Length: 362
Image (cartoon, rainbow, N blue to C red):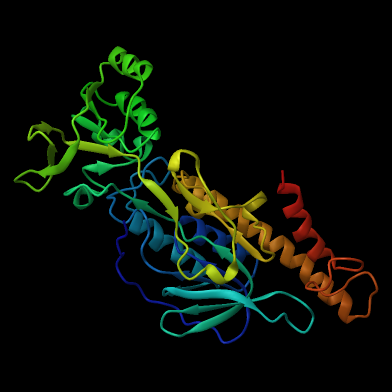
């Protein structure tokens, strides 16, 4: 499920090589860019304009900003990145790949947009977020972000005391039911095509959660355009004002195949994400990931924090790379070009990046 935000003035792509390209203009990407720009790094944010929370009226669960529309948070974020010299460019990434190293051996990456524009950067932060995959039940998608919700912490207070239904999609839905039971006395669990063991049924009965085992055929929309209920395979309509659905979450990977980033599946078919270690470092030197692209359940606050951590980590390793290059330029014996051989006399920055990844291995 994706929805495009309102257009905004886009910055131009610079001709010169920049320190960092951030792919993704959500909370993680903008906060990572903010940390880098405040450290006087040249940074570009490539923003497709399709954030996950675009359909929502407000963002919740983040102190101070609770209740703020997602579009307003992003608008402020772009302004703040630009305040420190960062650029925000509207566009879709068509490809991102390794480029020939610099004359001093430092890493280089080329990011090309769908319209043919391209830019070169020393490092890459992937903050593309994720896509929610909903069950293919007629009428479900049109209520996404309003009558159809996925997170009790993001939307729970707003739907409290309403007749809520849990549309089961897998094992995670059982946990969903217990969380939403905290918010309403009127909760129905639609097993649809999933199964429940007797222990879970007993636990639901103890909490007053009604179970409906007849498959769901469609979501019913009321005359006012809001969600009105669920139509079952036997024709019965169960009145509901809200449906909670545990979606399958998939990191957005469009245009990123050239980076060859490792990915991993979550248990119980919950989703697929980019694998990462400390501060979002990946097994690919020079590339970090942050936010929902690697942490599928992170809310806005956690994603922003992850972006900040990744940004500070990138800046620290760039500082070491700059020092290696400066030392090599003076003929100092201890430093060697960052992109040089791993064995023997590899530079401090190169060793630091590799040691980070080694420490994350089991």
